[in-house]
Image (cartoon, rainbow, N blue to C red):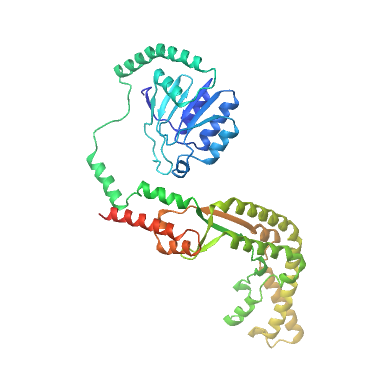
Length: 431
């Protein structure tokens, strides 16, 4: 393969950085965390690292970088320079440099094609002198490097000549496949791509809000029931079976017992948290959260999770006690129930035989009832949170937009803005 045209993925850039011995120059529209980590590691090893990026709000919103990555570079004392609107991208590690063509992660293709062109020594010097302000005392060194690069250029030209002569360019370049293009065209007509202007507009709002799903598993353990298998019931009458099943609640009035005060307190705290941060959206049967409150929300969720873990340890023995009490209570209730509603085949038994038979029936019933172990009940008790990003499909729905406006999540003017962009896009597609 040609030395001058390459496919460079993030892993290849990281390898190039790790192989540098002295100096790394890099210019990008912005930067993501993976590459930032490689640069900070190079800095720790004593290499000189210089980077030019565009840290405007738009560059982050348009999918070119991550705020956390820039923070990482700052904390590592890497020399960061700004070039507003910069779209010229390259990396120079010692004597090896490439023009690279990064794309927004919003529009990234699944397959990455050729995206790097080797830079000749003279152009490397030109880029370094124009993109990176020189510290005092470095000018002479750079002038000397410029002279050396002119000498290197001779070798570079020789390499290019050999590359052309030996036909090392193995990239598959062929005439346009008209049939394939028509297939692509049909698919795009059937499912049109979102216009970049509209996508940017959508991103402006989708970065401000997210769907949030908060579930408190096991929060209803106080109303848990056990089931009597049909085969264990000595009754055929459906109404009697239904009445009997209604008596199978495990716990009785936990709300009034002080051992469970903390459990109900946590339940209340979860609901308070839900009302504070999770805005219900009826049209989607989901909730949304404003992203500027997300960290505050997650901090409180973390605190609640810790309380739930502590609660699980505290109330284990009390749950076990309640289950044992429940068994005694159910035996008494079932005994009374069967006495008052004896199965047809034993209703005429003598009292002492009837009592023994009832005890035998109860023994058979309870041998088949599966009571939950208290630790398994508590394993189910957990607070879980999941976030989902909004999509263009969400913003296409008027009911959803009305819900956002009604809950003061997005102002009326912004809603009109979205609708007008959406309408313009749909009209363009329909033509």
